[in-house]
Length: 461
Image (spheres, one colour):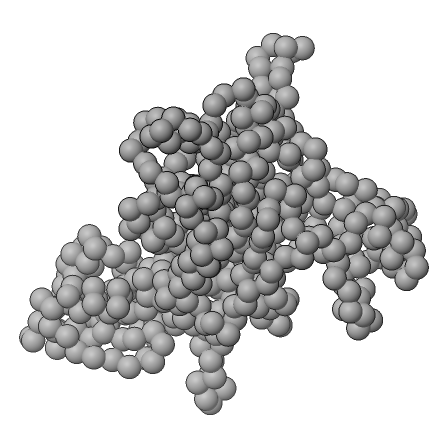
């Protein structure tokens, strides 16, 4: 199997990602996160929040509702223009994204084309001119705009229900709370507001595992500033540096797997004056991971217009202006997928033996430490259990006393546990234990009283 197939299989087998509602046949573009996946997601959230919110004096945190006033999405432009180009197979009526079909055809036929720059009519002409068909080989309908917002209703009385939307991004909750934040908190420009939360998009595209799903988590920042006193290009350059530093230094991603790509004028969203993406080299090619956009004062002005509320910044002399915004926005699930893609290895141990190992940075691994006795023996079990109960106060730990040291090591390697601690018969005499490194498989002997200090240094170095 290829890397992509191996990761999908591994995620289900080892409790990282499960197909949603699998007992009923599942739902396309939908996945649940198993015990180890949930912990890895939590670790990603925590390190993002600490880096971009807690450790900065110019940042605040927020947590807004998934369902907001529907006028929010009218003001933001999502109701009118939050669309993807949809085509339909005329025979089986399956739906596809027109830009993806064109991109796949161009790649297969070695044609150089920038699909992001194409409008609907240009896509229609290109499909006809090149006789591009559906994956099943059937003729396609003409592309049309397909709105990605999920609609639902609130209300308890039939006929008295109001249409609302599941949010398509977390950003609008920040903009709509802007005035309340500035009224209730002591802030001065420039300052930012960060939020992590679920967003929903009625995606046409299926496949590529968790890369593109109906429901996903976003980590977004809206960084407000005075365009007359702050140079937006310098601010964007600093945020771009911070984003790349986070990926390389905090998450341990190789710089060779990352690249910047600037959006073209046609591709760039209507609200943006400049946009860049960090692309990551997934197993299926270079794809968008993390975006940053200079949204100017578009969003706040839209909400001023549609709500009638004053959202301007008031200077000490009484003059007013609408702050501008730089927005770094990333999907937590894509960070998750990126980490697995880079960390998954199948190593040849010789003599026909292999081991699967997830080489995650220790600080991000779902389980930091595994503790087990060398053999099934009550005396070893008592000491190993006491070490486990002590260490679990500081780290996510697992305890295993199945008795097969080789299998215990291999299981922890596969879920990415950086350190395994083994209690043997010598431990009963010298009060030391053996620590085995996941990546090198080297072992060191450490006094039990020094284990906490040793692990803290190694895990957070």
